Amino acid sequence: QLLQRLGIDFDCVPSKVDEKALKSQISSPIELTQELSLAKAKAVLKNFQDAIIIGSDQVCYFDGRILGKTGSLDISFQQLKEMSGKEHKLITSYAIIDSDRQTLHTNETILLMRELSDVQIKNYLSTDNPIDCAGSYKLELNGISLFKKISTNDHTAIIGLPLLNLGTDLLDWGISVPGDEGR
Image 1 (tube, one colour):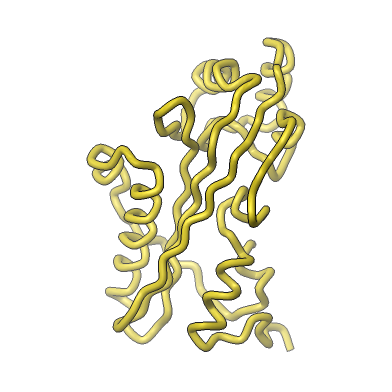
Image 2: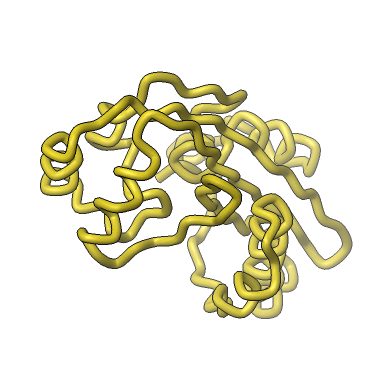
C-alpha cells in the first residue's frame, strides 16, 4: 500500500528470510534493520536478477532492547504498561539493490507515549488487537491515540517505509517518481 503512493510499477514478493537467526546475532536496532533489509532484498534478487529490489524492516527499541511482535494480548498489555509515559524509538530501514549496486537508508522515529491507565490499555488492545506489531500498537489505526509526541523526518516510516527518502533514492536509481502507473 505504501509503495502504491509513489505511483511506481512493482510486484510484492515474499523473501522467506529467517529473521530469527539474525535477531539472535545482532543487538543494535539500526544494524539489525539494515541487515534484515539487505537479507530480504538479496533473497528476492536471486530469482529476479534483472530487477531493482527493495527490502525493508522495522523494529521497536525501548529501554535498551528490541521489542518484537508479542503474539499475545497479555504480553502486549505488559509492553504498553511499561512504555506508558516514556519514549521509545521505531527504527525503519530499507535496502535498494540490483545485481551491481545497493543503497541503504535508515529512519529513526522517537515516540513519547502518554501516561496510560490499565483501562485505557485494555480498551486500546480490544480495538486494534496489535499482537502482530512490534511495540504492541498500530499507529495507522487507533494506536495514534496512545501518543503525546512523535518526532520523525518522514511520517511514512512510522507505518513501515520512509517514502520521502525512498522516492529520492529511486530517482537516483533512474526510476520516475511519481511514476506513470495507472495512466
